[in-house]
Image (cartoon, rainbow, N blue to C red; front, side, top):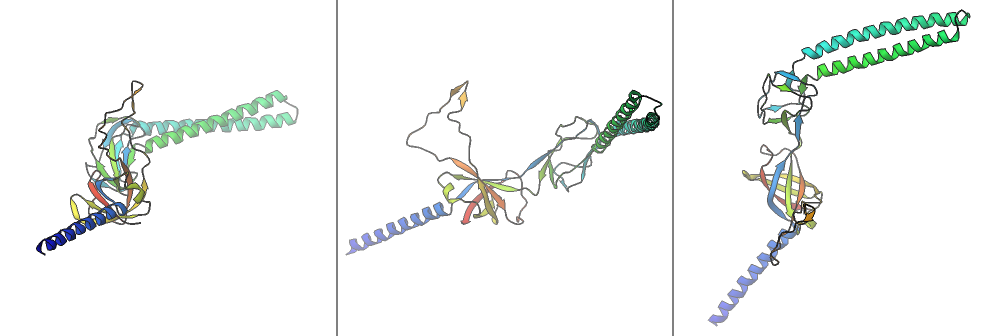
Length: 285
């Protein structure tokens, strides 16, 4: 009797263990979660459109900025001179175009009265067309010079946080050379890496809970946006035109992890930084 009682207790314990294992496995499969996730955001590289020395840079490293804030200014002296020069050339071209127009009007009257021949009249037309083209070109040059003058002041294209600022006044910069990195504060999202055995249970629109490593008791909501369609495969990549395949242990086969993009819902309770480690759990389909 006593042995049967122990046997019954053992069966109950084993049954409970199996039931718990099944529940955990079912929950893991239907509502998967991962601790392999990171906070991401778009980084805007700030580069000037013109060249020259920086005369002022009123921002500091790790400073938050708003869209339209001045980041730095390039010496505008050369570009102001270019605007004045282009303006003078436009005035000269406009005067020449007016003169050609007046000359064409005279030649037209003389041609109508048979005083000049058709060739002379056509030459006057050609001179007027050429003068108008020169005026249009001078106008375009002035607009370009004015744009370049405006480009000497570089403003924040989006609101966010400056990072890794290593530029100071006096630095000579070239057009297209990235000087600053601006983290777009409106673009934060979470990249969660789920195993390929879980991907079939992670769908766009699924609600998730996100918890940052440094703030485990302040989780926030998110929504699955999409799942990545490819990861880099080292085996089979070519080395000197020959595929390289690493040796594997047949009885150990690790599943691949695919990135899942998570859109953050609402305002998170803690500040977000690129690279923060997070865990993500799917809540509902």
